[in-house]
Length: 289
Image (cartoon, rainbow, N blue to C red; front, side, top):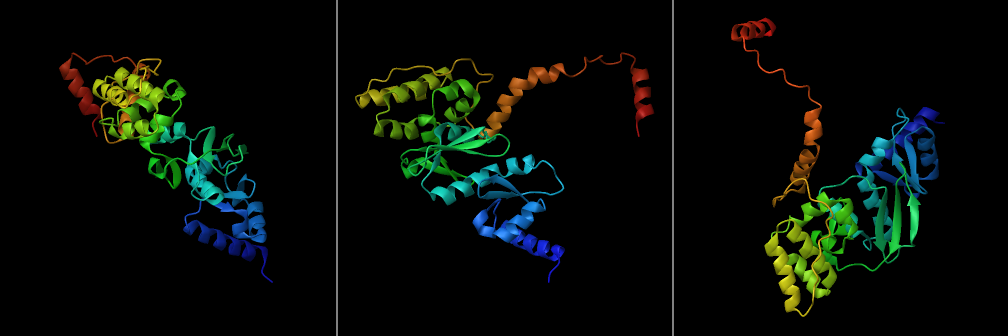
């Protein structure tokens, strides 16, 4: 009969094999009750939500870092198992992801025709909310780490107006990533989104993108719509953004401009250069190694 150490070693070998398959989370039915309980009791598994576990380090009392690092991969694994390919992340969160903002939300809103309009509690005071909704056209979906999200144009169009108030920098980053309005207009015109067209035109004009704003308004009017232009931004931005292929580069520019004054204020006041050149050189020679 195998001793407890040999049994644990066998369970760890199984866990390693699942890790090698790229799994960051373990479904209860995938590992078997005996192995699961043995790994859980020895601290190698911790519960995420009912029926799901994440691999943990028994030497660490708080596995928050592990959870946060594997969050998006778990989301993709969980929703793919539950809804197959029939789900998508909300437009608001999709927009943030396209802006390079992949911070962990307090609650991730996911929509699916099979959803039960329910909340699922997760570690670190986070949660999912599954909302029943129709699937968008597949051409308006992208993938992020295996997770179905709105395409960039679809996210910008269907994001709620509150995004411009809560995450103005992120909204601006996505807006300025478009060089013209053609991709946006294909969705706006196909679905007769008059009010949304007016909001986007107002946002572009606020950002100094007059040509794109005029193109949206003119195209909607040519199709028989009457858009009313409105600016969804409430405050000026810290920096005038330029078109760039990388949203991360723009986020760095925004963050630097935002926190630059505070950063500079924390440095001690410069005493200036020593006007006695000979003394300065002598001191330099003294400390030089």
